[in-house]
Each structure stands twice: as C-alpha cells, then as structure tokens.
Image (cartoon, rainbow over all chains, first blue to last red; front, side, top):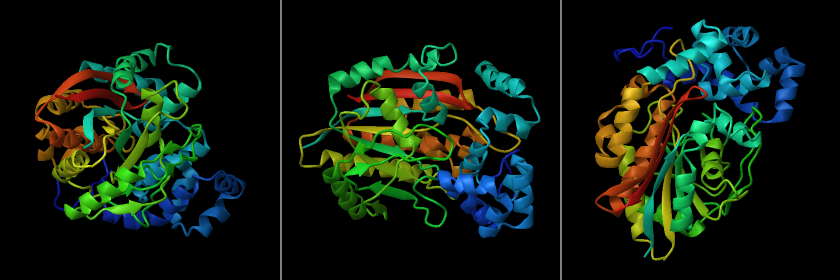
Length: 119
Length: 282
C-alpha cells in the first residue's frame, strides 16, 4: 500500500483516511453507509450491479466490491468503519478481514494477536 | 453545585456486545476481560452517579462524511441505538440529561469551542456497550447521559491537546453547574488496534501501558502527539484513546489529583488491546 501523505512520513501498511481518500471514496463509502438498514442490505444482495450504479461507484470501486478484497476497497477510498458494514453482509468478522489483508490464515492471524502479549 | 465523582474508560469492541448477548462471559476467551468489571460495578454501586458524560466516537451510525462534526454534543431527551449493519442486538434507549446538555452547550461555546449541537442523535456501540459492562443487571442503566462525539474517522482529527482542553472545559462547566447531581465522566474506545491495511492486527503494548500510566499521573503526556503520530503508535483505530484523554481532562478540572479504583489491560479482544480504567477524584 502506498502512502498518499505528501511530505508527511508514511506509516507502513497504513492508509490515513484524509481528504484525498475521502474524495476518492465518497460514493463507495456512501453506499456502505446505507447498509446500516436491512432493506438496503437486502436490495444490494438481490442485485449488486444495480445497487452500485444507483450510488455511482467508479469501475475500480465496483470491481473492488465484486472481489471483496479489503486492500482493493481501501485503495478505492473505502473507510474501515463503513466497509465493516459491507463485510457484515457476508458474516465476516474482524479476524477474517485481518487474515485476508495480511495473507495469513485466520488461525495464524489470531495467534499473532495473542503474541502481542510478549511485546 | 454539581460534583464530579470520577472517570471511567473502557474499550468498546463490538464483539463484546455479541458475547454479552450469547452469555459467553465465563468462557476462557472472554473471562479475563469480563472479570475486570465487577470491582468497578461495586464502586459505581457505592458512588451512585446521577449523570454520565460520555466521550465516544461514532462509527458511521449517526454521522456520515456528508456532515462530519469534530465535536458533537447531544442535547436529546433520549438516545436510541439502531442497526449498525452487522447483527449486534440493539440495546434499550439511554435517558438524556437535557439540563446538563444545555449547560455544557452554553459553557463550551462561551469557552470558544465551536461545537455541533444535536437534539436527535443515534448512539452506536461505542456509547451503549460501556453501560452494558458497568451496569450489567440493568436493561437501561440508572443514570442519564450526555454523549459527546469526537471525530476519529476523517483526518485531520482534533489534536490531542485540543481534546484534552475540551475535557478541561467540560469539567469546569460541570463543577459550575448549579445542580446537586453527581456526575461521572466516561471515555470509550481503544486501546491500540488497527483493523485495516497490511498492518491490520497491529497492537502496541508498550505504548498502551505508558498511556495508562499517564492517565493516572501525567495526564498531558499524550497531548504531545499529532493525529498521525497517534496512528503510528496506537493504530488507525487506537486513536480512540482521544476519548480517554477528554475524560481525563474533565477530571483535571475537578481536582488536583486522582486515585485509581481499578485498572485492567488484556490482549486480545477481537483485534484490540482492551483497556479498563476507573479513576476517583481525590
């Protein structure tokens, strides 16, 4: 993941959700915000392409939604808090999402969390 | 005049709500977390606060990026929880303390904090879960609340120094409130965690323990950090410690020192280093 912070020092493996990402991701985040309501989640599941068009997602955003790849969703301007509502549609928990982003199995990811006790 | 009896801070991980709903408190994964709360519950039983001012962050239930307030003060008669999209059972509404809300609105604006005032406000797990932890027997806790939301979603965040000053201003206003009620101040969220990016799962125990120490003895320690420095140290969601800092600022306004009633630190709950702190104004 590349930092987009101009002169600011980058934080490895981390995107800071600033104005640049907020501009890039607005349509995607607005769609994910709508998933607070069950009727909207149901409408998305029934016809994802039509639902994405209604919110005006860009093609990279739509492709990231289709792929369900969190790193791609973040690169498309998605914010973790709103993306969590998208992930919830598929019953993914935070360890599923953490494992996917770090390339670990879920058990490996959970073991890494526990290992933080040894810091 | 009102008095501030103390402050509470706790993590607010959504999975806690699921564990409570399914009655998993005694399971090995959850026990070290839930076992920390009874001493604080007993202390609350003795102290009997009437009103709780809650510093928390909204995760996209009440606020979206179309209008994102840096500081938002609730001024509603009641605060409802609602579906956040991923299946945590909705909790009972919390009663609002409109008298204190409007006193705080007047005081904060006079103190040059340009807040957003909310006469309707949905509150998410960050505001509701702590009440389930501190008053587990009560569907609705025996207190009224004033929620104050701090932006931790869209950068730039308010600086840690500004957040501490917000807490100081809230604390001064409470001590000047011409009302005999007993007020508790709460900050929710943290400690270190990061949900997204290749660094997902990041936890910084050393930083968390230093932060906990600072809450007790050196409350302005964390005000040295910028928002991005806090991300680097505590993770993208670890910045929620700003809510703790606001709580601590309010206590600093109420007395020269605090004593620790109880403190706990446990890794992990979900992807989070879970913290609990109860402070009494000396």
